[in-house]
Length: 183
Image (cartoon, rainbow, N blue to C red; front, side, top):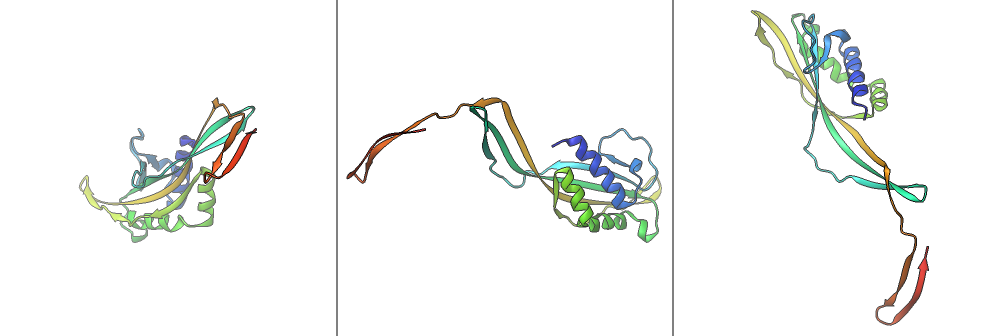
């Protein structure tokens, strides 16, 4: 996963889906200074809710085998919008409802696929409206659960292969199997 490409892609998509200019959409912790309203903050959070077992794959690399570990993962994209526009269609809740509806557009699904992620589900919107700096500020939050596949390969340290296997023995104590080398 190229995390920078993921961050840039999600930021651009969110700007397009919400109608908020991309310069007013930032990742949590980014040094952005003052922003015009409405503005949005995104955050990726690891989801360790479900356990999974990674698959270990071996692929031929010359005379040896390269090891690749593949595992399904889940991350949560937290989206928050802050707005001081009191018109109904421009309150934070309405803008995030627009984002949530666009999660399932085919164009969004295709764009997410190019980023290496897929939408698992979106949680309920939370209205966090409050008074800030003696003004009413519309604040809303949405969590989107995303799936992605982790793929890690170790081609620098291949493992050796078994050249031959010798089979022999008896079956049910009655049938003798002669020794045989299998390449």
